[in-house]
Image 1 (cartoon, helix red, strand yellow):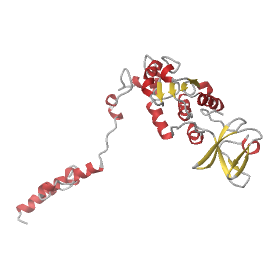
Image 2 (tube, one colour):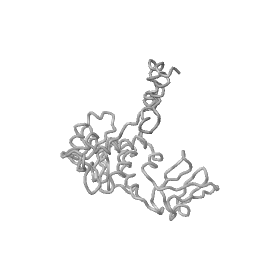
Image 3 (cartoon, one colour):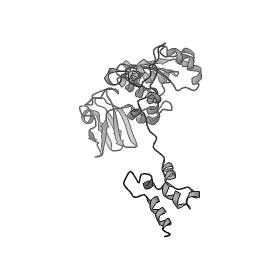
Image 4 (cartoon, helix red, strand yellow):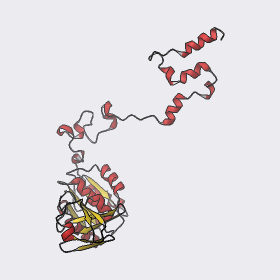
Length: 293
């Protein structure tokens, strides 16, 4: 079992997610001969979990049932043991997007805390990337390292117990991205700069279609990320007019409402009347006035 690779069957030693309801989930360490108590009854690991497929519906001793799910960073976020305040999925999604993480990236993080963001970063950079995470508190650092090993991602992460503001990340010139979640991040900026790659985040731009990096595609700049003003015209987004804008274009001005010659100019059908073969009402109005009707 690994948080970055899917397994079909539940095995002894796995970490599984027991789904009791949308607002009620828990993680369990599967162990031969062990039992887990729920409000629906007992789950016996030997007979109810080991050898079953992830996603199976398991009947508890009281007749109720639960689902047993494969762990993911999102499910771990809502079931992990809180050692600190954590980041949740909405913020994590924004962070990983703005850091432009992808497989092969090297990331430096401080502090580790409960490991909520760390698991999401590991899935984003797997299988060839690496996470260097620093935690000031010794017990939290040791517990995080233990969890990473249980979750099968210890080969992708290095946990250090040190003060990032004084000692840095322990690496230099290797990181594609740095994330600081500490009380005084401004004191660690110089260490973050030292950890970043000197030549720029080439790995972050990654590979696009046809084996080209994003900056090598037509319309992309020679250096740095692609800019919207240099994209091909077909790739640019056009702002859809707001409803108030559309209403304003179709509604006559107050000063023009009393003028019938200007009133019909604001009707949408009149702007393209000739192109659609519709009779021009302006000419008809002038004919009626000239005839004295």
